[in-house]
Image (cartoon, rainbow, N blue to C red; front, side, top):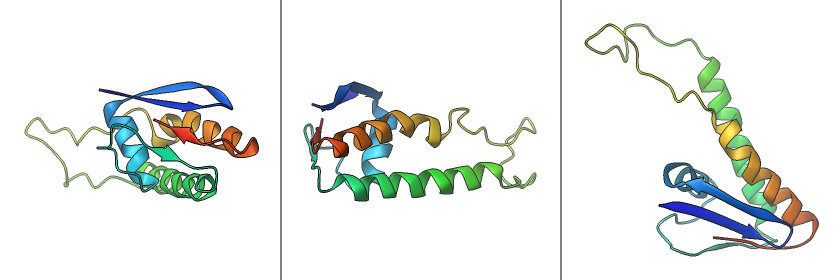
Length: 108
């Protein structure tokens, strides 16, 4: 499944299902809804929530990993997603900012 975000202020933004689901959960929207809306009034709070989640993800990525914890049978630790939340959320945050500047909603 794909999430296709639309706004009159920007081009469409397409995200794969796991990434779109995570972004929607962060901003407090139900990812199980086939269609939804982030109103222009809700955008500042959505941006703040995403930026806070990005900071938390960055901090978790820079924290030293415990070598004992998360090791699998082959002696390797758990693998992190090589693409950070900062990278995945950046296009959506840009869409939200542009939409807020022009007072347009974002829908999916």
